[in-house]
Image (cartoon, rainbow, N blue to C red; front, top):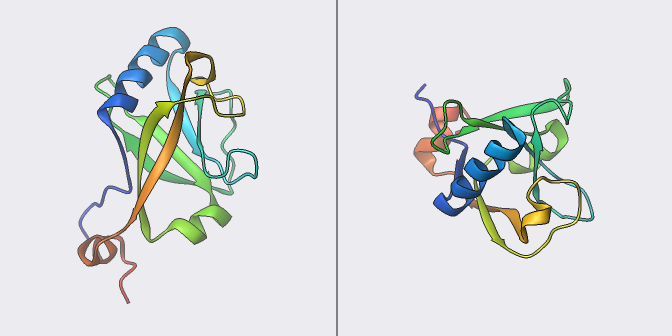
Length: 127
């Protein structure tokens, strides 16, 4: 099987992530499935949010630093989203929660699209 990218980042989000990394150190995302932020990607300094055995690693987004920013979501959320490609973007506004971008006047959001037939095949999800 070929490696398929499950998650990406826009250049605007990558620029904000570079700034936030300079302030906070290495970062990671956990795709929220909560009620308050809906499906907001929550960004935390590595180690501030503990990843558990019920979380799925979706991959990392390249923001032009030494290491990609890892992205996770809960297994139960993944069951709903496993056929989608996610793109993390940033827009003006303030989201609720403890995500590190909150004080900047911007908030991360996830845009999604269905995976193509070849991507599904590459992931072993084609039936």
